[in-house]
Amino acid sequence: MASAISPLAASSPSGTTVTAPKTRSYWSNVLRRFLKDRIAVACAVILLLLILAAIFAPWLDLADPYRGSMIKRLRPIGTEGLPLGSDEQGRDMLARLIYGGRLTLLIGLLPVVFAFFIATVLGVAAGYAGGWVNTVIMRTVDVFFAFPSVLLAIAISGALGAGIVNSLVSLTIVFIPPITRVAESVTSSVRSLDYIDAARASGGNALTIVRVHVLGNVLGPIFVYATSLTSVCMILAAGLSFLGIGVKPPEPEWGLMLNTLRTAIYVNPIVAALPGVMIFITSLCLNLLSDGLRSAMNVKD
Amino acid sequence: MSKAPLLQIENLHVRFKSDRTVHAINGLNLHLQEGEMLALLGESGSGKSVTLKTLLRLLPPKRTEIDGTVQVNGTDIMTLSGTRLSAYRGGDVSMVFQEPALALDPVYTIGDQIAETVMRHKSVGRAEARQVALDMLTRVRIPSPERRLKNYPHEMSGGMRQRAMIALALASRPKLLLADEPTTALDATVQIQILLLLRELQREFGMSIIFVTHDIGVAVEISDRVAVMYAGNIVESGSTRDIIKDARHPYTRGLLAANLHGVDRGRRLDTIAGSPPSLETKPDACSFAPRCTEARPQCLRALPPFFAPSPGRQVACNLEEGYSPASHGLTAAPAIAC
Image 1: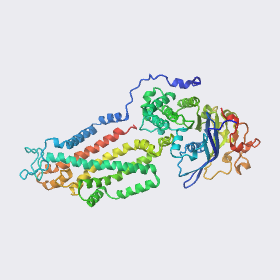
Image 2: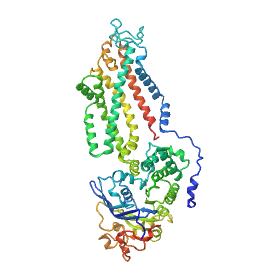
Image 3: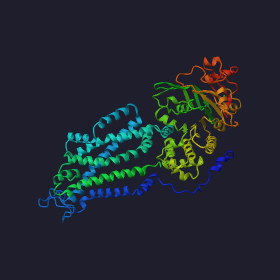
Image 4: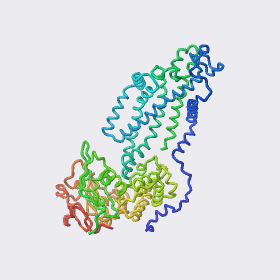
């Protein structure tokens, strides 16, 4: 039977002796490309240090971030016993900055994580179902889009009252619309591709197709977009605290610290600017990191 | 009488509704025996791909109106839904797409994609499914299949991807394979390899294939029987040899004349003048008549009936009116099984 098929036989050696470089998996490729990007790696290291410092703050042998001293107020950087000076109540700035990282990172990252999950569900549902489902979800999202994000966050936080949980809620609500928009547009472009039809033709039901073929292709772009929002979220969270509708004193939080030290800007400007510097470094690193991730995860080149 | 056909399409009508209605398929009748290889031939927009997608119920249900019966193995597929439809798609009938680069999911390896289909239809574990995937890649003659299992679609060449696509389609051993211009996106040497592979696999697995193409050379190369489509219906069908030797319908003759073989330099190529009808209205006369050089007045008045000039043939053309009419337009003739 196979005798009539000579061109085929010629084209396909029956043995598997072909030697070729071992193919790497997708994620090891991503890692390799990411490691080549020096700036992104540096940012990742800085962020990792900040996060580790925040997590292990109680074991770092730091001064009590809540204990002030009326004598040692607003000391400059490098004072003995106060490596980064002290704030307007004489509390150790180093300890407060590290402890402040805990809250700041928490309310900077958690809303994006929550919004990422909720918005992915909404956006994928809207994009895949289309029709009136899409209309309902996307027009509702558009309503939230009508407000500037800062204003919306302030409005919701103001209505709910100050507090950590309330600012988490308000920031989550602020970040759902943009991520939903991205998820919807990526999903509807994937939905019309041939491999979705091919999956249906080979018997996949809607749930399998969404779970395997849609999510597999849209999670990457949505994730990268969400990482780019974390820096915005941090700044917004700090802004809420700065305005007094986020974290309440005496909790250490970078935005709040920036607010209370504002009055000392002429007395000891460098110490007063330190929380701002931390916010700046963290959000810059997050931005550059998400940029690096984006280029490392782009397979199609 | 031969045994019941594997596929039986009767009086199929497909209309797409939107701002304007498109009559994509108009009263199509088609039979396919087990183990038969049918080439569906026609130009763009003649309804070839729509026929295939109807067979898998892939057309968007909201905008599509489908009349007529489609029976596969005695089951009316228009009544299927839910899990039975999922089991039918890819289980009894599966499809090879035109552009393998688009029809394979870019974020999963070839092995994962084949294994997924196998697990779905055969209810086996992952390890066993991967074994089947490896076996399928070997059968479609992909060199070093173990390594290719772990490849992503973008790491493979076009011919390799189409082989992988065929392996994926055949992994659950369907009785009927639908091939939608599977070689159009490939270059000529790879094209013939894929054609031969398909024919060999068809004999190996004993399945039937409907092969859609607009390339009459490809159709001749591979098929037992040819059905020529024009404006949403089959205008002529018969065994490949009969069609090549003695095409009856003026459209088929035009297609056969319009090839590049034996053409002298400097001579104009033979073409069929005009263009296909728009199908916005349901055809009530011969759709080809406006382009036909031999059209008669009655061609423009009513749809031409099917005539059977010889066993196993049918031609929808008034020029054949000396012959007996084909029974209800069906190929109920004995000579079809190869």
